[in-house]
Length: 291
Ligand code: HEC
Ligand code: HEC
Image (cartoon, rainbow, N blue to C red; front, side, top):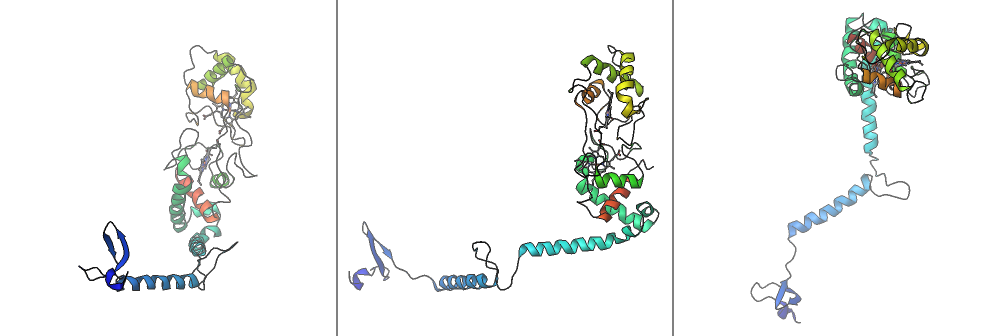
């Protein structure tokens, strides 16, 4: 086909020479502005490959002349934030945890810091204000499984209860008398009914409370005390008060006795810095029930 044949008579533009059923394709050049942007993009890509991290290699990647790394940028930001927080928290480390409450400036800082850390780390289990839930102790009351002095609270937060820390509290758990078969069903019902009487709750009418009391003396008192007064060393809760971790109705107590209980409080020592741990202890104690 000659050049003249290829020209489209109507538009005067060359065609590509392709033809489908008498329809021919015009061969319009690309617009200049489009081409320039296209070339500029290519040039930009080449520059980018040279200065920024770009190409994957067998075990690494091209680092680029600027050596920029998002990961390092994030780590640097984090280190800066941690250093800033540590600097703010440093005064808390200069006094004993007990003394923090005696200095209004330190106390104010510790409470604000502790409140924020509590929301981030603890509220999921203990509730937003430390109000607790079934199996998760209320931190606002005057009843402490593991001690309510600031040092004891700090210790609980540090090492946890039945946690993975080698120093964890809660070396003993509540045995599963039902599951391990050491108490029969009716014995469990009886001792559960007796446990209710320790805190002046009405026992189940069908239960033999006296028989339950005899079982309590031999099987339970070693941990919970003869009158159910509890044993903090063991983390065995008081049973003669109105505060229940797992519920006070006959059914809940029977379940506690049948399946056992082993609440887990994580250890925070390795996850939070010392100033935050101290702030948390001060904050938790401020929630109420300070001893
Ligand atoms: C995974 C759930 C969970 C998280 C998260 C958690 N705790 Fe606990 N915490 C528990 C449980 C369960 C217990 C009760 C352990 C037991 O049965 O003795 C407990 C016990 C405690 C106690 C002892 C209460 C007492 O009566 O002596 C304190 C204090 C405490 N937690 C503070 C905290 C703080 C502060 C945080 C956040 C840094 C936190 N907890 C995060 C589950 C949790
Ligand atoms: C080896 C020590 C040990 C013995 C023996 C023991 N308990 Fe416990 N008990 C515990 C511990 C520790 C807990 C707390 C478990 C937790 O915090 O998750 C507990 C929890 C309980 C609770 C739950 C209290 C609440 O606030 O909800 C009840 C009820 C209870 N025990 C009753 C009994 C009775 C009744 C017996 C005897 C048949 C008994 N326990 C024997 C250690 C013991």
